[in-house]
Amino acid sequence: MAKKIQKRVKKKVKRNIGAFLIILVVLTSMILIISQVDVDMNSNTNKITTKKERKKETSNYNDCLKEKYSEDELNDTLKNKINEVNEYVKQYNVYVKYEDLTTNFSYGYRENESLYGASLIKIVDAIYLLDNDIDLNQTKKYTSNYKRSYSYGMDHEKINSDVKLNTLLEYALTLSDNSAHEMLYDFIGSDNLKAYAKSLGAKHILEGSDKYGNQSAQDMSIYLKRAYELFASKPNGEMIKSYMLNYYQNNLYLNDVNNVAHKYGSYNSYYHDVGIVYDEKPYTIAILTQHGYNEDIIRGIHAKIKELHDVYQNERIKYCQNKK
Image (cartoon, rainbow, N blue to C red; front, side, top):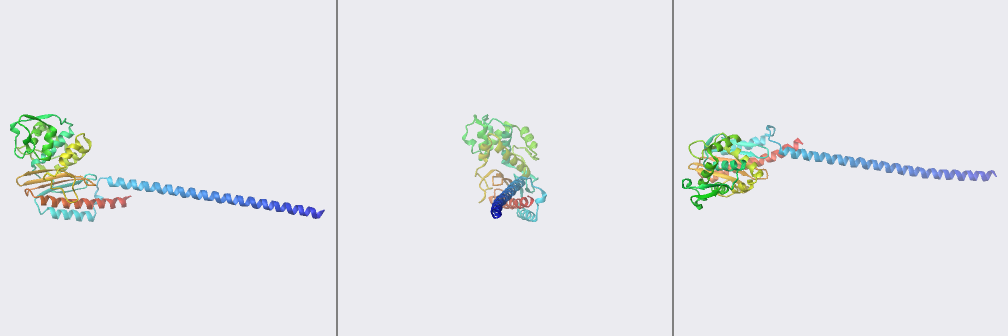
């Protein structure tokens, strides 16, 4: 009888040990699963945090690229390039202004001195009409007193005919038509044109006795920047821009620069070319000279300015990478 009881006890103990081992295995498995889930969650949390940090860094970097230029960026590389441009341009009797349209980084050489601007005034005609939302379908009568030399557009119009302002602008900007300018000048009014230019910050406008007057490279930079804004924002902006995107005496074109909205001015020894360069990073450039028509001088100076522009863009990238 005692032996039977002992056997039953042993069997019961074995069953309990087996059950305990099963429970132990189950508990161990659950702990491992929970631990793995926790590790995975932490890992995912780290990934999410890293992704957010990267997104923030990218945003800060892109914002930096759009920031206005500060003196902190003027490193030795930029200084050396500016000195190189100075050495190049000072061999000529020229007046130069360049400005990056995103950051306002700029370069100037005698940019505040004024000289006869000739047909550069036609840009002011255009931006005045755009900025004041003038209906370009309005007309101006072409009378004989407006007939001028170098008027290749108006030569095709009949005396005493009514010509649309839009047509006059096209002739003035694409062919530098003098008759068209003088008709626009009288339509706008001398006082209105002067007041408008001054309101933009220009210092020299219609100085002298004719309808063209003096300009400075700095003032042309002001007009070009305003034109850039108006071309993008006004209903007729793209159309007026297309008039300036022409090859007619456009000496601002380079091998790697072929999208320039420009206007030239020419009279005796005065020859100028100014424009908006629609580069990946657009900029304005104004080159006024007293060497007569000389495309090599204009292109040579622009090439140096383009080098400066490219160096600045590279240095801005480095600056923002370090800043982020």
